[in-house]
Length: 222
Ligand code: PMT
Image 1 (cartoon, rainbow, N blue to C red):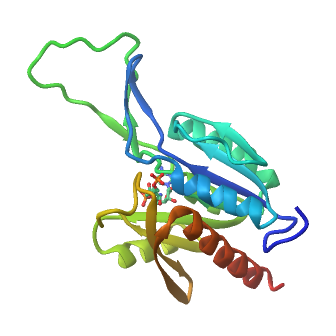
Image 2: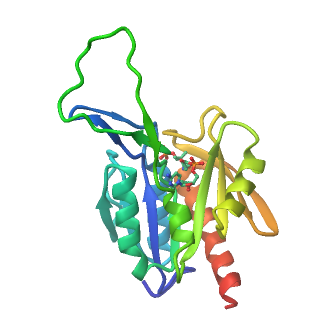
Image 3: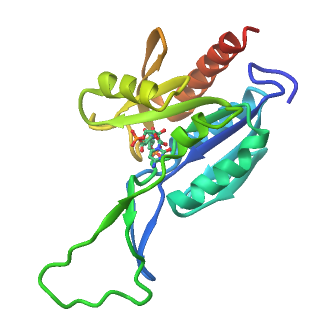
C-alpha cells in the first residue's frame, strides 16, 4: 500500500442499494447492483489506499484487500459511515440510498384487504451531506443520478451538500447507469468539470479515482 496516487490514505466507499422494510417480508429498494461502487473500491486498493466498502445488499464478491461492512437500510448505512469517519481521508458516496422509508415497519406481514393500500413514507437522513458537515470532514465525493437536467442538478447537489466533487451519472441513457456493465459520467467540482466517456465500470473507476486523487492533492495543497 505504499505506491500509487492514494498511498497512505484511508478511503471509505458506499455502494449498492438500501432496503427499507415495510413488514417482515417486504421492502422498498432500487436497481443498484453495487458494480460501480465495488469497482471504485478495487481502484482505490490499486491506487494504494486502505479501503473500506460499506455495502447495501448486493450479490458481488468482496474485492481483495477491502474491509467490507454490510448494511441494509439508509439508517444502518449512516451509522456505519459515521463509525468509519475517524479513520477516513476520502469518502465516496456511490450508494443509491433510498430517500424515503416507510413511516412504520409492520410487525406482522401486511394482509391483503382493500383494493388500495396507502403507504406513508418519511425522509431518510442524507448520508453524504451529514459526512460533509462533520468536523473535521473528509474530502467528500457524492454521486448524482439524474434522468434529466443532469449537470444543473449535479451542480446543485455539489453546492447544497457542500461536496468537494460530484460524479454526475445520467441514469436514463441506454446501457449505462444502474446495473449495467458500462457507465459514463461527468465530474464536477467548484470551478471545473470534466466528462469521462462511456467505458466499462472497471476502467471508468480507475479514471474517477485518478481525478479524485488529483483534486484531493490540490485541496490539501500537496
Ligand atoms: O450500483 P450500480 O448498478 O453499478 O449503479 C451505479 C449507480 C447508478 C447507482 C451509481 O453510479 C450512482 O449514480 N449512485 C448514486 C445513486 C443515487 O442515489 O444518487 P442521488 O442523486 O439520489 O443521490 C445523490 C448523492 O447523495 C449520492 O452520492 C448518494 O449516495 C447520496 N445520498 C442520497 C440519499 C441519501 N439519503 N443519502 C445519501 O447519502
